[in-house]
Length: 428
Image (tube, rainbow, N blue to C red; front, side, top):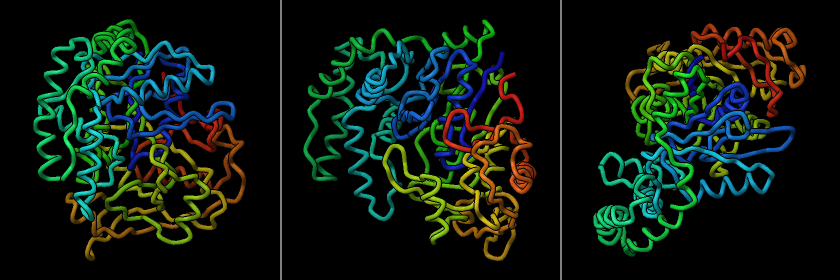
């Protein structure tokens, strides 16, 4: 049975939560392998809306065990808050299982995130202020706090004190802020130890054993390809590797155990935060997409920047992630347009680029070259097979397949779990 990766093909917010929730009905483990609570996934079940920022979307399915891998950075307060909110709605979750090697987001990470963004001014990245970047920085600098440190008080206090020596100097001397008390931080972290202990496991060994036993493991990426710290629109990216390859380093399974990679792409394009966006619409059309698509950040509530589908952007993600399938979401939002532009190439200072330019400077100056496809007016929210979609809608999907170089195996036609058109089986 396969190891399956679900990864965003644009700048996030593609609807990975819905796709993962659907697939998790048929999998044994659903694994978050990157990011933290800077991501937000929304799932609608029988009209009820559930929003997760840290928990994998598959946590809603009782037959699937949720796992937070070593590549995730965890805000313990957020984790317990999400579990408590689910319990208040009648969903008692005995998991997630948590890798002992996952790193913890501390209060000083959140403080550093906010003060540095303010300090950058016009050069800000547009982070959520949740402390994700500073937590990953500490991980790379080898001064991070891991889940396993909660169970050794002496080691934990030593590590917090060592990290704050440097950070307090920055806060006082550069940002004119007060020092953070190491004992207060340590006490807060230790207060979570007893509750979290039953959840902590050797996740890498657990998942490899599950794959040995022919169980299905679904790896859920946060954010998306073009927010990847290595392959995204740097520096306007996240601090981890949400690409499919990150599933291996973020969970502890080898590449040969991944058998299918499913890209999630919205039928148009959105982005939150700063950075280049060639097809962005800064007019009433963009506002219409935002309103009809409900394009507001799950985590921050910020209005998302909206634009037409960017085929070279998605094609780049298909190539680098070796995607086997694409799930196209929110196709219903495009109902009612007489014509639907699709970006098929870029003009960069008079030179046509059929694929994404190699350099950030060129991409920043890229202007979309559009192909115009006929729209449709029929309501597609009730469609459950490809043949039930209007002819122009089918043609739109097939043209996107040609442009991105990957088969589209599923289509979202509404927010509900059941509002999907499946063309090919994504778990076989």
